[in-house]
Length: 218
Image (tube, rainbow, N blue to C red):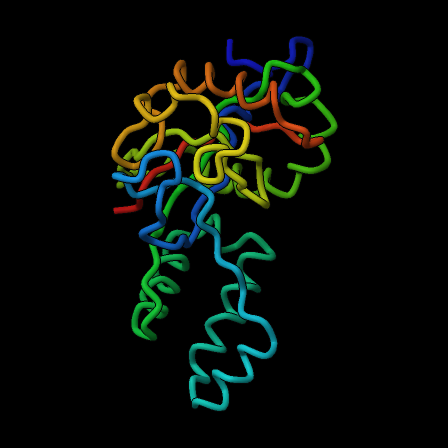
């Protein structure tokens, strides 16, 4: 049984893995704990341009790029981006044409911490994660045409703060780098779960790390 699944919560167990869907991600992120690798985990979401930066784009005549930012924000806000592969691919291509290269990834919450407070049936899932239930259900299953990259240790959506990419709790663990693959991620859920315990034992945040699985959309 996956850690975090709550007995006595019929109908909720099937939510693991929770399908979060498609995300447009920054490419070529450096891996702090493994300098020879490129980090390809979940902690690569965009930082939206500031109003001042958008004004500069308009002044430069980059009106299509400004419109793309608006379309991206709207579709991410209402979650249509995350459940619609064709839309995500159209946005990815349009941004590339504007000189903004992006990766297209697919992400799931694979494992919760051992504490039942954070498993399916908990307030976190019935309230905070409720907005993702529609994406999970609309996808209906893991899509075809994906290449598995590995498993990340991350805060759940929307921040995706990664204990690998921005090490913090795992920075002092000399064992971590040798367990990461060339994408700076774990290959097995078992190994990721071991480091999940370590990361959560030292975190001061109110929200722990989870195991998230990451695929590249081919």
